[in-house]
Length: 279
Ligand code: NAP
Image (cartoon, rainbow, N blue to C red):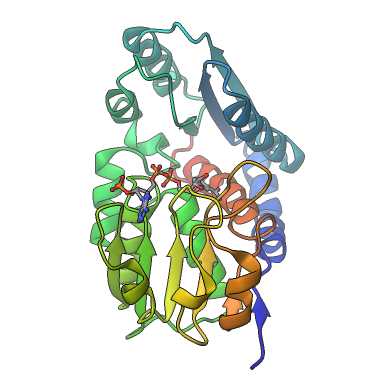
């Protein structure tokens, strides 16, 4: 059986190439697309993610504002920082890096982001619009997974997609996007009792568990398409890559799979927002 490695770096490059002309046109009209990232505290992984996102912006000519707040920031202080960015007409997208320290009401903070600037689909309005099929900006990782599927022309309609994970930024929205594309979707989570049996029926598997090498090769159906959103310490995904490669017909590597496309989707959504909200 022919195996396809779903190369996220290729997909990401194409997305970024397409953005270059659009960014130039905006600049000719005096608009510099701008993404503001907010990091609260000093979690090293979060610092790395935010740095990568800011660097990716700057490389492409998107302005990046990096707000770094101390660990002891209160919910009210964070809300005030978000409000300032909502009111700043030069800012087109706001990304609050998840997770925030546990004493902060993260949901309240997400909800404070202006829907026009919610380029990572974290507000309940953004999520609802995604689920209903008219979302402007679905969460970037789910959007990246769909981009990879589209780029490699993987059939979705009528297929059984099994998503492992139901977080608000990943498992739930990617389930909704697959459903909108007419897949039959099963969403699994930590209380699912017969995960290997369910996975055995899956034509498409999305791993969004947050546990390294969690999904095992023998759990998969022969020829399944496997998309691994997982990103754990040591660049390890949520699937046992070598074992799943044996069984899958197409598979994303980690690193170089979903991750780079996620960043490209964030850039794309920021440019989309700059075009829509010309201030
Ligand atoms: P999360 O909020 O921790 O959610 C994990 C989900 O997995 C939860 O729904 C949980 O179920 C489920 N789960 C945990 N143990 C399970 C088990 N034994 N069996 C079945 N389901 C189980 O994580 P997340 O933010 O969605 O992230 C998931 C992964 O994607 C992580 O590896 C993260 O690093 C990665 N990620 C990657 C990107 C990227 O750009 N590539 C972006 C975001 C996240 P319950 O709901 O029942 O607790």
